[in-house]
Length: 144
Image (cartoon, one colour):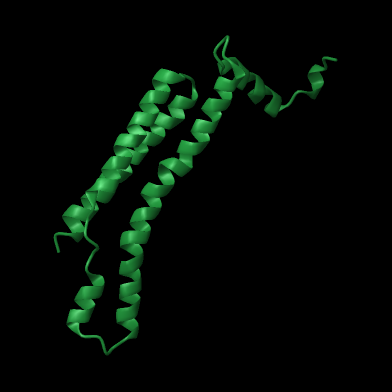
């Protein structure tokens, strides 16, 4: 039974979402697109690029500073050793770059849809964060 007075904002959004679906798309294709989007955004791209620099660079530095402030018996050599940045390994970040670029490009060719807007914007944000992290690692922390 059709009753227009029961319609709300969520019904409107459901109809908008249904209108954005290309005609003749197999429902399993839509399920694939939704699952790929859930896998890559945010867990596949943004979580690693944000958490790895925090855990590998910032957290040891903060713990080292707290230890230096709390322990007055440490020598200058100990302080230098604790605050020294970890060596930069460029391979994992750029391997992730190649893999993420391949996945998003392959998804664009294999299963085009509106979900790719989110994935490409996430990929661009991921590349920007990778650039900032690499620049900080190489030019700031390793140059000391």
